Length: 162
Image (cartoon, rainbow, N blue to C red):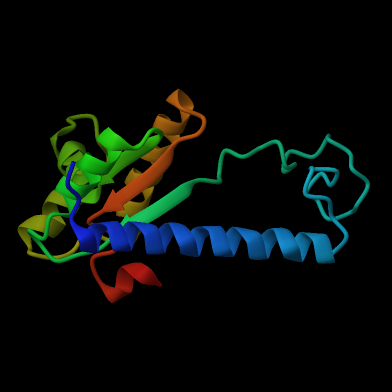
């Protein structure tokens, strides 16, 4: 079993950053008087009611995501596929594959716009790519509640980051 050392480093560093960030959020909640066990309902009023639609039990919008970065042809997709084969619960999403699938979908409302941008040699707007990635993440999470995501091919430019 071989992994590219640089890809493993990127994966481990990204996972470490995620864990560090998650712990900071938990510590902040503890400092604010909220319980990690979920005694707060997430609406900030401290009453613990579960009638609010934005309570802590609604985790549909929280995903573990690692963005795999690298130049064209650097092996991002290959390393992501190897990782998903060898690590349980990880799902590989390629922004390029999602865009190609959307272009080929005859019922797509975005396919025409994607075709225009690509034909003109332009980068597809981040809003479209983010929507496709989010839809794919939600579909995968519906099948596997504990899904974690490796996303390659996005962001493609500084404009995609902001």
